[in-house]
Length: 598
Image (tube, rainbow, N blue to C red):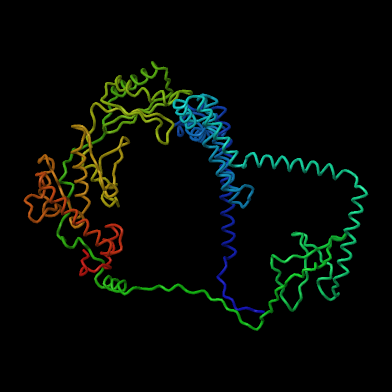
């Protein structure tokens, strides 16, 4: 019977080949990563003491590595073994191998079960190795040592081992369902199988032969009671299917036979690997469904209908006629502030004081040597106000021993305060930040004029200065709805507030931003009184835009709360989540000002 069925277009052969090639490529890539990682870990465990001092020297061609994969192998070993999970890093390599097999459609492992077991041993094995080695070597990694040391200090050695043993015991109990009942049943099944095998080897008795003969006679008598004609397919011998092992029953050409799962048949096996169908007294029920060749069966897929609302159509017509709404046209003649308003401090290059660097270097090395902390390498990075000294400790030196010396180093350097970064993110070094005696000037003009600030796409970009690596540091004030700036006198709170205000004034149009300023000290924000006409918001009956009387702040805050509630109502009516989405919808002329939208 021919059927008129619409089918979705299948993928072409070229697309299937491309997908197959991509799958093979990524599968082999993950397998290669697994092998490289495993060999790198093995080589790292054999030579970690000699190669650890080379951390952070990836680009130095003069330093040679003894790892089988060179400095890449050292880096992998240092990241996964020394700085993290120790010997459990081999489980990570194994997971890469499993992912590669899954991509290649080699389902030798159950994915989620394998990941679950791997995560458990990644957490458990480092702690166990830390307890066994007592933190010596790299088998436990930093993670295993820190957790072991913490548990040891809280619950003692006995409690630590109790936690380790109980956790692994619970794992096996939950995974293999080990309980007294299951163990007893498994032992009984094992005994029954053993006894059955022994009985099968014993000769059969005469009584058993007699019992078999009686069963054969009963079966013959039942066959004689029920007769089946030769033309019926039930009386024919049926060959077993080689795959499923079930009999292949012939079907009448004029009828389609459907056998439900609850229908059973009785089969007697014969010697030539075929079966003879012998119906039992309860004849199975067969559902007979006649064929319908004369009915034309068609399948159609409903098409997606794009429903355009009347308001959307009207807004689109307005956009086509007048273009998008430009809020800056309300103050079309307004000119953004220029860089000439900011003071130019001239050359702001960082000056290098070699005597200060050499003196601090000698003090750091000498102090660490007094505490038996050896250093194989030290490097200085000079920032505008802080100098960063990066040190590479000798093999076997723990990071925690250097962290404890923070106050001693600050005292020896006669510095107001230092900061130790151990380890440096993305590096195999330890950083010591020391304030400079003569810091360099970082002017507001230099950071405002930078391309990073000028080309920023943040909602409320704020530039705070430069980092220790002399890079522009920026943040989005829109992601900080509640910001608290605190600190001692002279730490830069006022400078920070001025940096925020200046950044926003140089980036935002008056139609996009309004300030409400409260200055209890009366002298901090008085400079901004000149921008009252464009940027400052105040009450209609207010005298000064910058509030200096704390008793008058209450009315301003109450009015702001009322304005906030009104804006939330507008967002609700416009089906928007935030002000950015609301303004975008208004600029696309989808919101009618006659309905209160603005």
